[in-house]
Length: 314
Image 1: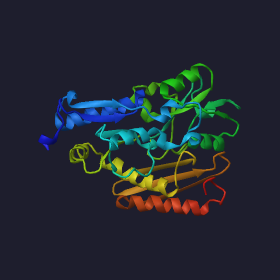
Image 2: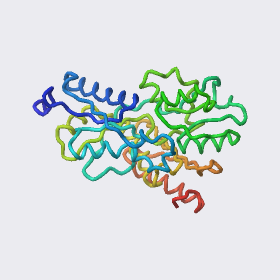
Image 3: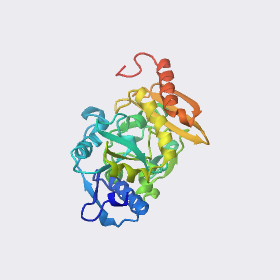
């Protein structure tokens, strides 16, 4: 393996989006690889790739192509050999990888909770009647509409810094971010409060970083195996199987969270109408080894309870 490691003359190229959070995740990946193999920073090169999802900020994701807008160009660069590995926020990842690519390395999962962010209000429950809340997430919007139908919801896209500026400019009274992203940026103090999963179940795979590689790339496979976090992989196996069975996309408000307890796994799921008028929630416990089948079975059970018109895609 030592002979296969990158060197300053042939650095391992790490592909990423260009936002501050995406770069922080790429830097974390590089740092873990440096530590695992006692390599200098020069043995790696971070390659920023522009993605469609970061360039079109005035429309909802469901109107311009869904989750693949954050991954397509990066995966194309990976397949073309322009980069060696690709770092992704797992909640942005479609459940199917393009042929020739493998996603089997996950870094230790961060805080899974949503962060409530507001210039002048401490908690979601403290928002006054009719307050304007900004969010681009169909899942958060549907959950808010279900729990607080009095709120006025507006589209709110962009990176952490962009959304904070919109709050300062008075576009909305509050918004939601992932605690994981704030923690990775050293901005945990931005959150007025963290929302417990019992109040708002997070997005599937929220807080997790995945690293994609080309199938058959022995060097990348061996290096990524050294930094893979098995418990995170076990949790995401169940969550993403749940999402895949539901045909999850940016058009479907879906939440899911798996928790490990020894050799057992507890998976909670929630599906909602986009307008928040109805929600179906359920959970399942299973051996960790059966996470994938447990996720698919939970989704099938919940779909069986949903009316035919529950989602537009059904």
